[in-house]
Image 1 (spheres, rainbow, N blue to C red):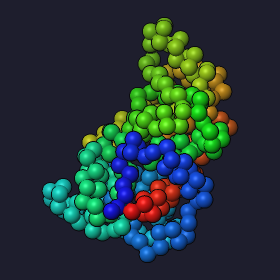
Image 2 (spheres, rainbow, N blue to C red):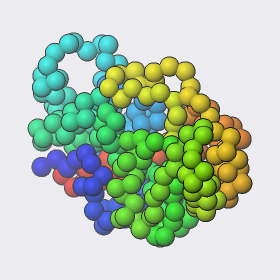
Image 3 (tube, rainbow, N blue to C red):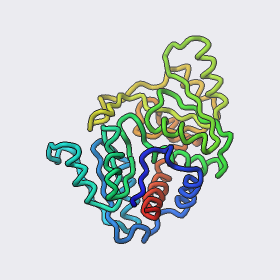
Length: 280
């Protein structure tokens, strides 16, 4: 029976630790030998799409890329799933329909990884973020305080579900230009105290379409919040792509973990693919 990764809540603490250990090993050249990996991205992606393709190729799998959606015939979703289910042994799927990956997995013909489901979930990004924390702070991250700045996006929602498993405390503050005095004081205090400041994208994202970016880059953080980030000693994270909310001065600051999030993405995606295949 194929094993799937659809929702982060379906991953146990033992499996999280197992994934961390497998990620430490890096891509295994024969880990997916003889298997076929399918990249089925119905929405734009840079890091996730290429990261999974690299993880599969570096571990010996044959890689099939579905390509852009404008090359697909218009047909019922069920018909598309019949085709996709038979293409590879393991597939990473991103779709504007939040249930598409789960429906594909229910056919039990290949292992399925949810690589982004509408505005609902993005479990592998949450695992990458958690793994990045262990590399920056040590394997035991219990007691760590991660503050999300801006509205929770889909990967942040998944990280919030994963946090209790790791013992990580998650809080959130908004980015209103003129918040109430009490809210501003609360957020400034949290920005000062947080171990990690995880800045969310402020650019318009349409999770219901293949083109995720609605238009130009969004605004930067309001001055009161930006000043608080500058005064903080917390490490800085961001899932990318970035807009004005993550200027170069933070992206390439010694406090930034953003480049590490990208780097460790290959190791964690390699681990996810191997775990699913080995558990099937």
